[in-house]
Each structure stands twice: as structure tokens, then as C-alpha cells.
Image (tube, rainbow, N blue to C red):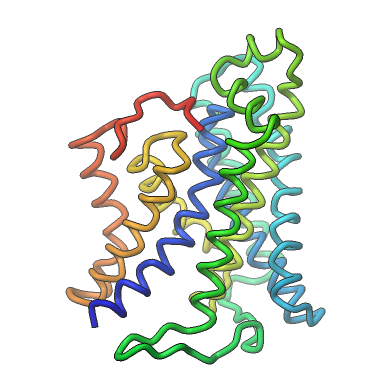
Length: 293
């Protein structure tokens, strides 16, 4: 029973970590709290729903197209709402308030466009077979979701740590003015970071929609609290910390639902957030500086 719950927790935690990766990247590099990030998550899920249900695309095509579409939405939204705030060096509170209003408007527009009801992804998107090891049952669908999360997280780490583009992004996160002095196009990099963050959110939306077989306009709202909990627990701007904290949160939610009460799992993210702020305000790994990416 415990082993099965841990497997389910890793599945859930992997999708939480994927969602939080783009959120922490955006905050660590661009220094903005972008509440529209949850809309990118929802948009990715609905694009995949349209592609799979209405156009008949397979998952291996629908997932990357949905991720790219969510990233494409993120770039103009960032340019419209946040570029001026960055130029004037406005604080995080300004970006919080601007994106809060934009997020509420976009959620309402999306609900008016697609309807407020829960919609289901086609059942044929993922195989129903499972691998049985003793009493432990692991679905092929679960393995595919965890594998997709691992590939996307690994690609982000490679981009940030193994490429010249990642080096330029980290330089911009450290000191934007110095990065511009050495010839780095910070405007283009900001657009790239917005695209990558939005794409990660969109991919996470597709995978969460698959895991729970439910897509609805406000699904991004519920994820934002979990996103905040993960990036604060992992350390603001810390990609590796977000991965670990996402897995911890997913496992904690599953164990709470399995051994206590399913209704309590909604409070786990808030409890984790408060506990970390009380005990380690700079995150579980102790990184106080938000520029680390």
C-alpha cells in the first residue's frame, strides 16, 4: 500500500515540479511574479484537448504543439504587461497586481469561450495497460507522464547549464545592466525566458489533464498556490530546488489523502508554504538570492 502511494505521489509531484520550473525560471530571471502563469497552464491543456479530441492527433504530437502554443501566448502577454515594469525597475508588488488583474480577465474570457464545465481528454490518448511487480501496479500511462516530466526538466537544466544561451540568461539574471554592456540582448532573452516558461506551464497542463482526466478553465488557479509553495520551498529561482520540492509536495498530498482524509490534501500546499516560511524563509536549500537559476 505504501509503495503504491509513493509511486502515485511521484507521478503527481513530477507534474507539480514541471509546473513550478517555469514559474521559478520566470521569477529568477525576470524578477516578476506573473500570476498569468496559471493561464498558460490552462491554455496548454485546452490546446491539447482540441488537438486530440477534435483533430485526432496522438499525444506525442499534441503535447509539444500545446506546449509551443502556451509559450507563444506567454511572449506577447509578457511584452504587453511586464516589459515596461522591468524597464522602470518596478518591484514585485507591481507585477503581482498587474498580472492579478490580467489573470482574472483571461480566466473569465476563457470560461466564456469554452464553457465552465469540466471536459475530458479522449481515453485512447494513453494506454490502459500496467506493469505489475508484486503488489505494486504501475500504469504505462504513469510511466509516460513521469518520463515526459523528466525529459522536459532535463532539457531545461541542459539549456541553463550547458549552453551559451543559458550562460547569457544567468548573466542577465545576475546583473541585467552588466549583461547589456557585454553585448547581450536582454530584450530577446526576456522573450525567450517567457516562451520557455509558458511552454513548461502548457506541458504541465496537458500532463495534469491526463493524470486526472479533467480539463476546465480555472484549473490554473488551483495550481498557482502549489506553484508558490514549490518555488518558495525549493528556494526562489532555484531550478533543482523546485524539482525536489515538487516531488515532496506530490508525495505529501497523496499520503495525506491515502492515510488521513482526501479533503485535507488541498491544505498540504498551504501547510508546506507556511512551514517553510516559518523555519527556512530562504527555502529548503538555503538560497536567499533570487537570481540563482
